[in-house]
Amino acid sequence: MIKGKDGSNIPKVVIERIPRYYRYFDWLDGQAEKISSKKLGELMDTSASQVRLDLSYFGDFGQQGYGYNVKKLKRELGNILDINTKKQVIIIGAGNIGRALTRFNAIKEAGFDLMALFDVKPILIGERISDVEIHHIEELPSYLDTHEISIAVLAVPKQVANDVARVLLEHGVKGILNFSRTDLEVPKEFPIENIHIIDKILALAFIIKSNV
Amino acid sequence: MIKGKDGSNIPKVVIERIPRYYRYFDWLDGQAEKISSKKLGELMDTSASQVRLDLSYFGDFGQQGYGYNVKKLKRELGNILDINTKKQVIIIGAGNIGRALTRFNAIKEAGFDLMALFDVKPILIGERISDVEIHHIEELPSYLDTHEISIAVLAVPKQVANDVARVLLEHGVKGILNFSRTDLEVPKEFPIENIHIIDKILALAFIIKSNV
DNA sequence: TAGATTGTTAATCGATTAACAATC
DNA sequence: TAGATTGTTAATCGATTAACAATC
Image (cartoon, each protein chain N blue to C red):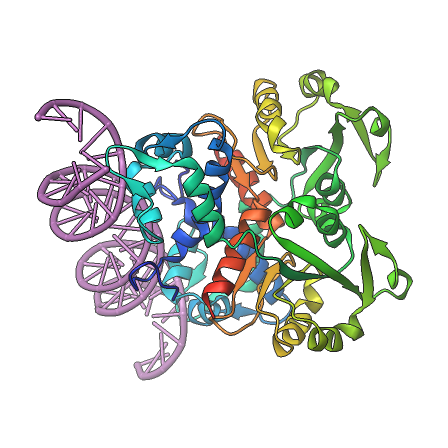
């Protein structure tokens, strides 16, 4: 469990919301000097209470009678999310998703340093996408042993996702962003974020169908 | 609110879990004839109670003393998710993400029919990606008026996301899968699913940092 | 039949919202 | 000073888990 300002546990739901707060303060920057929890709640379509309680897990960022200073909060949330520290990332799978993410500038702008791509197809090895070289998947263990990699993005077919995940864990990767269409079998506390695109579009289609 | 088998409201969290159940029954198909809520709960890392309660919103699919028949449940969940009906989809934005999704076969396999891509860049117009033609964004309103489009995938820069979303709503799109890095301002009940890739990787990085 | 396991209701847990003293 | 608004605690709401009668 992750601890907040005075040793209190921060609920997972709150952690998942922090990037969204950052987005709003980033957007507010230049638009306003300060904002109250009430107004921010309206903007974000949540309650003032939730805004105040969420932020209070991380620090006392506001001021009575004034609200939250936009520049300050953007800076504080940026620090919490470690925006300014380069975090080294590799992508496994140079298919559609892997390539798109490699070219995706927003990832670099958020402080992530794309180090390498890995794929199994011999024809791809040595190719460069946005200056990132594709290596053969067999080189993955030795690459991980000689580089300090924080995050691996998994964009491989579901059939091999767990095999790759095992190698990643064994060789010291700290967390996985999983785009493959399966749930990874990793120890309970190992950091994983799943992006299940098909699950999302199926849920959307179900909601639409039920709306008739 | 979406109603279940006897008029009861199905919580949003349950709806979002249904595609995951489908994945597990799809995977179990061929591996086993039947499965109990207890075993499925273990497999999915949740409780037997949750499995039973979730599924019971949609029907009485199990049998005492036996469990759930895998083939039957795969079929039932497939029907619920409308896997077998073609749903017509367009993608707005022929950048990295839009192109990757167009080439992404899993979307077609899940019953979605990619009809067209739209972009603002003149140089792209007329190009075909996986047999899907790129149209100019100005043609979007008339295209929507002459085609029955269920879902639009929004993969455009955040600065224009809400402008595009407005056109989509005005011209009868039923739901949006949003990849743009902003929250769309749409009526509360309009079906939206957000895939905020940057939010996910930032949350992951935060969890990793806090794990030290 | 006896054991297994469902669907459902009740109990518990956790997350959200409301209330309010503190204070800028 | 008076009004505004915070951070926090208490009350409420909703989701998860436990319990169990029904029954295959």
